[in-house]
Amino acid sequence: MKAIWKIFSLLLLLPGLSFAQAKVDTIKVFSNAMNKELKAAVTTPSTYDGSQRFATLYLLHGGSGAFSDWHQKVTEPGLVNRLAEQYNLIIVTPGVGPSSYYFDSPTMDSVKYETYIIKELIPHIDQNYATLAKRESRAITGLSMGGHGAIMLSAKHPELFVAAGSMSGVMNIDTRMWKVPAEFSKLRTTQQKAMLGEDIQYDAPFTTYTAVGLVDRMKENGTALIIDVGVDDFLIDTNRQMHDMLLENGTPHTYIERPGAHTWEYWTDALPVHLLFLDHYLARE
Image (cartoon, rainbow, N blue to C red):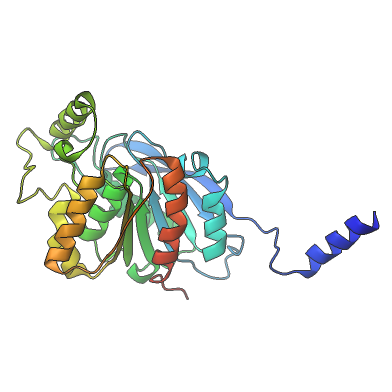
């Protein structure tokens, strides 16, 4: 009994061993652009008490995913909470359509996710949470389709994001570059044509509905970029293409290839690396 009491007393004396925990809110945001309600999870650190304002990270899910994926599917339980606590920032994980790529479709009113994220969700978060509502204090990253969304949205809206990242991202929506079965490739191409029209420009010069079509804007914007992908990922060729194009036009960026595939094990390991990179650019009060 004395030994247990000594251990408990030691824990009380060590400030580094805190039992404080981040908090997760599930919210609903109505999209006027799409006339529907969407969910998001908002993680706030234990220091969130109204006495200060916080930098914000928007963390995007992949295709056929959900707003809760980053909380429920990572192989380290509570990873998002731990990182919100460690870096003392707000982390927002929004939910979008299953294969929407985070863009605004010119043909479908139900796919206006660029407008939703930029003009509806971010203002909602800034109005309802104690954020530092400025470019210097906002970053965005995501996995797979969410990597495409993060790179595309940051390239098109540099006034909103100081830094952006992609984990195993769809850097080019051209499924001919994906190492996938023909049936899957055909399905995704059919979905893309429904959203973008039959005359999608898959070859150079690329459409601006795909991340590689925005490399010139990335050079102009000065947004800090991190792109990583596993060497066994079916999207690796699209990431190498993006890397080569950024090198060719002289856009500073961090590019990483490491062991791994298109898996939650990979993304669980990747997210702390992204936070370490992104936090370097996020301004605090």
